[in-house]
Structure formats: C-alpha cells, structure tokens
Length: 78
Image (cartoon, rainbow, N blue to C red; front, side, top):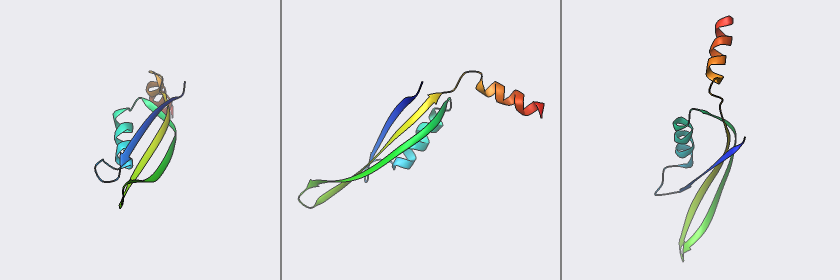
C-alpha cells in the first residue's frame, strides 16, 4: 500500500527541505521511497517581505519484514 508524508520548510527559520527529506528517510529505514514531488512558492507576508515555502510530498511503501533477509540470502548465493 502506498503511503505519503508531507514535509515543508520556510526559507530562513527551518532546516532546508533537502535536510528534512534526508533526515526523514534516515529515520525511516524500513521504507521504500517510490517518488518525491517537490514544490517551491513565494508568498508576500508584508508590504516589502517575501517568504519562500518549499514542500515535498514523499510517496513510499513499507518494506516487508523479511526483505532484508531475502537480499542477504540472494547475495550470499552468488
């Protein structure tokens, strides 16, 4: 089953969207990333102020519990 995770970052105060994506993937080693949709937009937050908002939608699946074991077995057969 395909699942989603939405991440967002404002330009100045938050970690970059790249950092958020990489951190989330590192923290979720039991997933298989299918695709990442990325978007950046500028919005006016004051008379002379623009804010950049970056968002990423990660499409992923949970890995089966035995997927790692199957890979190790196949690799050792070689």
